[in-house]
Image (cartoon, rainbow, N blue to C red; front, side, top):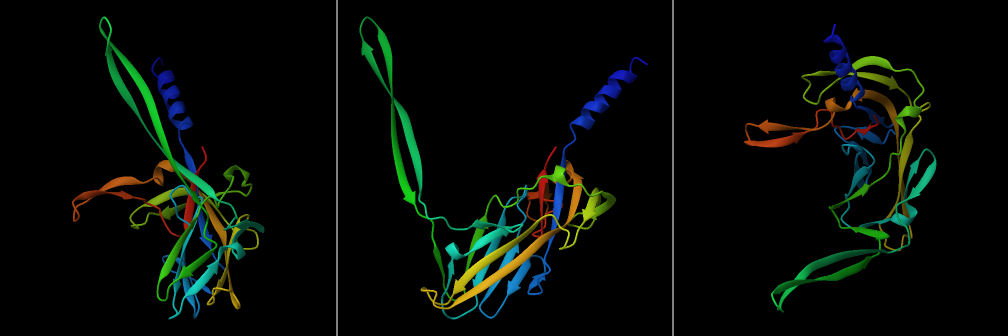
Length: 258
């Protein structure tokens, strides 16, 4: 009986240290968006490829490819991310100053009845002012990429719908990972977002093209964080270790919450 109490306490400690994450699946009901490995939108002018995966969530990244033989332009002031009907601007008319400070110490020895060490700290700062680009130029048959940070400010504890027990497969399809999950559709999803872009084939934007791609969270998987975090795997063919995300997908993102 003496050994049962410490073991019980040890189990309680391990249980209390277990961390969980919410893994969010994203879908789109937009008929112009094709779900392949990535989300892809395409028309006669351009092709946009989306990914929301970032390890611990919070970004949306996309690549815009110009299919034409003439340049196209994106006006970021007239473009935005819309989260649950709240607009967030891509472009703000302000400048940011970035500085780099270099410092070192100089030493000198003086003789006055012995040696004494003096130290002087010297610092130099180089700074530059950066103004965000409002109009982006995309050459014919080329692409640009954009990463928008701090996109998903979600609070997993606010999910009030009941979870169901289930499993999801790892990327290699070899392992079933236990999860608790809830599923939603576009109508009842508590998190939706849109990417709205204003594009033109003329730098003066005399004629504008509007792209409005919408997405929503359709499933939330509650999972032990240790099952989703990356690990080092030795690749025999390449003869080196590689960082592997067992459940990564361009159509998913996750957050740790306790």
